[in-house]
Amino acid sequence: MATKRLLRWGCVAVLWAAGLGAQPGAVRAETLADALTAAYVNSGLLQQNRALLRAADEDVAQAVASLRPIIDWSADVQRDFARTGGARLARNSGETTANLGIVGSLLLYDFGRSDFLTEAAKETVLATREALRSVEQVVLLTAVRAYMDVIRNREFVLLRRNNLRLLQEELRAARDRFEVGEVTRTDVAQAEAAVALAQSGLAVAEGDFARAVEEFREAVGRAPGTLKAPDDLTRLGDDVDAAKAAAMQRHPDILQAQRNVTVAELNMRAAEAAKRPTLNLTGRLGTTNDLADSEFSRSGSVGLELRGPIYQGGRLSSLERQARAQRDQRLAQLHLAGLQVKQDVGNAFANLRAARAGREANREAVRAARVAFEGTREEAKLGARTTLDVLDAEQDLLDAEANLISANADVVIAAYSVLASLGDLTARDLGLGVQIYDPAAYYNLVKDAPVAASEEGRKLDRVLRALGKN
Image (cartoon, rainbow, N blue to C red; front, side):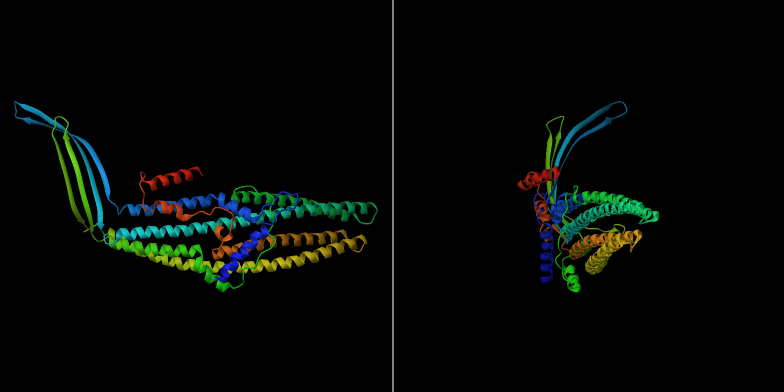
């Protein structure tokens, strides 16, 4: 519990840091929390899986309905005709009758098969809810990556533009020094080549930034504004074993796999019960009227029907074996899900440690490269260094700054990947300022299989109309 509280407080701190106000007089910068909120609201993938969950909810309603009386009506008009007589005399006769009937049946006992299927439908709903939570984590982590990629590529563009500006200044200086005989034509050519390469690098960076914007638009549902990079990241802890144990308790992939095992076991028991007889209460009311005259008849019946299988070509035995195989498959799937979750937690923490170490190393690299560049440039002014030395030092500084930009983005992505590996990357866990989708709301409306004419049915109809407008 302490680990989970630390993780959640850490995430709140991250979002708080990302949500700090913009500079006075400027348009408010968009924070990571804003982007995650928009992704949660606008995600078509979430809407698709919410619809799948509602479809699973309806399976419960259908299972419940199968335990209730089933009443059908039938109507038909029948024309009977005949020709009677001998060789010399024949007579045609016929009558037209109308039949109207109501037939009802009620399952009384089936050795628990219907109950098993109903419980299996309920467990499927719970498994589908966990699948929805897993999809939510994918949506939010994709938004984090898209957000940081926009910042990363935006910084690359600014860095390349600044580098191009500096190289153009170096080129002008080289030409001026060439005019007074301080450098050779080779130095000028080297500066010109560096400017051309910088222009090419800027074009590539601008293309990467445009692609990052499109990926952001797809992940978040709108174009990015002025994005604010998270200023700080709270430590998520370093006890990997405790994190793995926590993930095994609450990760949606684990919980979904556990529910699926229960569904398979219930289906297996239902398949076993299908071999046994069923007891039904049956009833019938009918009326027959002769349309040619006023004759009519009324009839009705009530009875008990006991029916069971004798021979179906081995189908029932095959269904039972199939259910057992599906149970075994679900058990294996649960085992694999556990291994995958543990691996993901270990990988996520390893990536976070590596990203943080890389960030610190790149900060030092930038500091050293800047000192080296400034010193080389000063020495070149005194004639102790060549133009190529200056260009090489500037390229080293550019590479170091680009690596630091990527490292900063990688740390944020790695931190949120840790949350996703633990099962804590959801709108509720992050405390996003958004109306959280309630997966039980629709289920509570349909679980008792309301008919359209009831108050519950009218309430459900209003909900369906509202869903249709979204």
